[in-house]
Image (cartoon, rainbow, N blue to C red; front, side, top):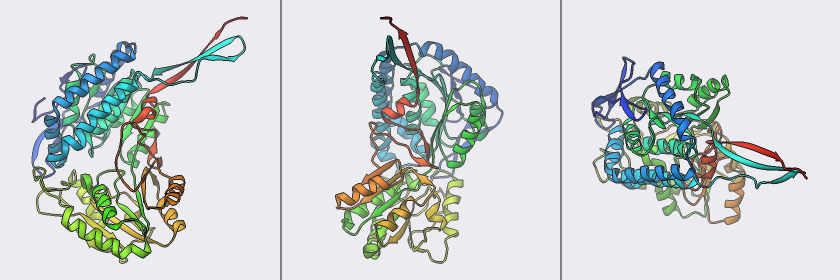
Length: 478
C-alpha cells in the first residue's frame, strides 16, 4: 500500500479503481495533503461484490472452528503491528499518538478475539417434539454477503465492529471506510488476507455516491452502517426497495444526570474525560450534563477549572494533550456554527474558540444557561463542547434526559441506589452507565433506540445480527 496513493483491496490484493476522481487525505493537525484515495465507481463496487459472492461459496461452508482460528490469527497480527496501526490512525484522525495503542488498537484486538469465541457459541432453542411425532431443531446460518460502511471517528475500531462478527458468522463483506480515514482499514484488509481466503474481506474507498452504489447493489443481503442519522435514513430507504436487512448505529446526545449527592470532584473528572476524549467525536460522549440545581454553580465552576487545567488539545505527538483536532474542516465548521448560533440565554463558561491558525483544533468548551429546546441541547455537535442545564427534581431530570430524538447512551451520577435503578429503568437509551461514562466491553451490547438506530454491535447480540435462523422439522413417526 503506497503512503501517497491508496488503492482498493479486493479479492485478496490491492487493485486500482476504475474511477478517475480521488480524495485528498489531509492531516487534521497541519491541514497538509499527504496522500489520496480513489472515489470508487459503481464498476468498482460491482467487482468487490462479485469477489465477496464468490468467496462466500467457500467461506460459508467453513466450520466455526476454522473461522475462529482465522480471527485469532488476525488479532495476533494486529497486535504485532500495533505501532503501525497507531501511526496510520493518528495521521488520518489527529488523535494523540501516545495513547492510541492502549486506548484503541488493543481494544480492537480484544474485540476480534471475542468474536472469534462467538463463532463457536451459536444459540437456539433446544431440539424437541413441539408437535407430536415431529422433531424440530434450529439452524443458525450466515446471511451471505454484507455491505458495511464505517465513520471517521474510530476508523479501525468501527471496522472491527463490522467485519469481525460478520466473518465469524460465516459471511463475507465489502467494507467502505470514511473518505477521510481509510488507511488503517486498508492495512487491516492487507493483514487479514494472510489468514482469509481471497474475497472474504474487501475494502473499497469512496464518498456518498460509492456508499449509495453499495446499498443499491443487488448482491448484499444486509447493510450495516455506523454514521449520521441522515445517512442512516438514506440507507434504510434505499435498502427497503430490495428488502435488505439493515443494521444502523447512528447519532447520540447522551444525557449525564448529576444529583446533589454525587462527589463533585470525581464526577467532574470522569465527565470531562468522557466528554472531551477524541475531541467529543463520539456518539456516546458525555456532552449534555443535567445537574441538580442546588449544586449547579459549584459544579460548573469545578468543571471549568478542571477543563482549563486538564482538557488540553494540541498536536498528536504532544504527550501532554487530552485530545487532538477534530477530524476535518467541515466538522470544525459545524462546531463553530453551533457556538456562533448560541442564543442570548447561553453563557460560555470556558473555551468557545478555534485554537491556532493551522489545523482543525478547537478549545474544550462549556456552555451553561441553555433551554431544553435550544439547538445545542437537541442536536449532536460532535465536537469538544459540553452543555450544562440545571434541573429541580427527578421528574424534570428524566423528562429532559429523554427529551431528544436520540437514544444511544446515558449516565446517572448518584449514591442513591434506588434512584439509580429507577433511572436505569426509565431512561430511553440503549446503555445506562451509573457513576461512570463511556467504558465499553466486548461482552456487552452497544446500540440505541429512536433516531440512534437499531441493531447491536459487540456482544452475542451483535454476532447474532449477522445470522439468520432456520427451523427444520422432521416427521419421526410413532
